[in-house]
Amino acid sequence: MLTREDNEILTRTNPDTPLGEAMRRYWIPACLSSEIPEPDCPPVRVRLLGEDLIAFRDTSGRIGLLDEFCAHRRTSLWLGRNEECGLRCVYHGWKYDVDGNCVDMMNEPAESKLKDEVKLTAYPAIEMGQVVWAYMGPKDRMPEAPRFEWTQVPDTHRLVTKNRQECNWLQALEGGIDTAHAPILHRLITKDTDRVGIGADTELVNARPPTLEVDITDYGYRYVGLRDVPNDSTLVRTYHFIMPFHQIRPQQLRFRGGDWHNIIAGHMWVPTDDQNVMIYNWIYSFDEHPLVIGEEIERELGRGPGDLRPDYLSIRNKSNSWMIDRQVQKNETFTGIEGINTQDQAVQEAMGAVVDRSLEVLSTSDMAVVSARRLLLQAVRTVADGGDPPGVGTSYYGARAIDEIIPRDRKWRDVMLPKMYAEPRG
Ligand code: FES
Ligand SMILES: [Fe+2]
Image (cartoon, rainbow, N blue to C red; front, side, top):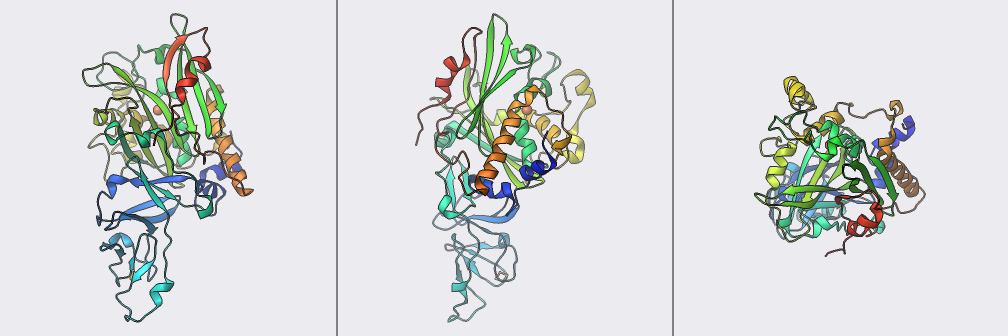
C-alpha cells in the first residue's frame, strides 16, 4: 500500500505537480509519426500530462508541438491551416512556425511590430522509431534521445500502435509490470476454444506462482519471474522497467507457417491527464527476420482493425462493460472479455479513474510494482532537490528482454544476463 499523500504524488502529472516536474525531464511520446504523415498535413490534437497541444509537420518536414490555443483570442489551432512553413489560425490569420514564433498577422497593419512580441509555448520534438517524442522540461536538462533498440531497427522490423485507456497512467503501468497476473487474467479454461489467451496446458499456466527478483539499475530495474517447470527446469522470464514509464518484455511468435521466433515487445504508458493514459505498444524483431504478422498480433490483443475507435479507445470499453460475455467466462476464458489487452484494460479501468492505494493489501508477487513506486518517488525527490532522475542516461539503449527454460541448478544471472544487453545501435 501507499500513503494517501504518496498516492497523490504518483498519480498527478499536470504542470507544477511534483511528478509532473520529474516526468518532464524525459522524452515523452506525443503521437505516432503516421498521425502527421507528410508535410503540410492536417494538425492533430495532443494532450500530454494535462497540457493541450497541437502537433503539425510543416512544409519542410519539421515537426511543431505548440500550445493548442492561439495567442490572440485563444481559439484552437486544430482548426488551423498548415501552409508555407507555419500553422495559421483561421480566426484572424495569425501564423506560427514550429518554434512557436508568430510570423504573420493578417489582421494587423504591415508595419505592426506586434508579432515580434508574440510567442506560443513550443516544445522540442524529435522523431524516432515511428514515434514523435516531446521534451517538456527545462532546456538545459534535456536528456539524450531515447534510443531504445526498438527505435533503431528498420521500419520493416517494428510495429508501433497506440490505444487509450480511461484510467490513471499508474494503474496501466502497474498492470504491465505485474507478471503474476498473466496466466490468471489471460487464461483459457478449456482446450476446446478458438479464443486467444494463455492455453490451459502451457508451462505458464501450470507452473506455480513465480518468484520475483528485482535488480535496481541506473535506468530503473530489470526483473525476472522464475517458475518451476517439469524436468528439473526453471522458466525464466526477464523484463526491464525503464523510468519513468517503459516496459520491455519477451514475446514468442510463430511467423506465418514457420518456426517460433523470439521477438521483443513493450509498452509506454504516457499520462494524457490524471484520468486518462495513452498506451504506446511496440514489438520488434531484433534479428534478420522482418516482422510480417504485426496486424494479426494486434487483432489477438484486441487492437486489430475495427477494434479501436478513431479516438484510440477500444470499442470494448468501460461504458459497455468491455462487452463481457458471461457464457464465455463460464466455458472458455477466465474473463469472458475478448482481446488480451482488453482484459488488462478492463481490470485497470474497473478500479476507477484513480485508485486509492492506501486501501490495498499487497502480496509477494507485487514486488516489481512496489519497486517501481519506490523509484518514482525517489525520482520526484531527486528532481525536487535539483538533481537528475534515473533513466536520463544511455545505459538502457541495448536493453533486451528474453525468456528461456534453464536447468534448475543454473543461476539465471549466469545464463541470461549477457543476453539482456546488446551493443547499442544507431
Ligand atoms: S484567435 Fe487566432 S488569430 Fe485571432
Ligand atoms: Fe496482462
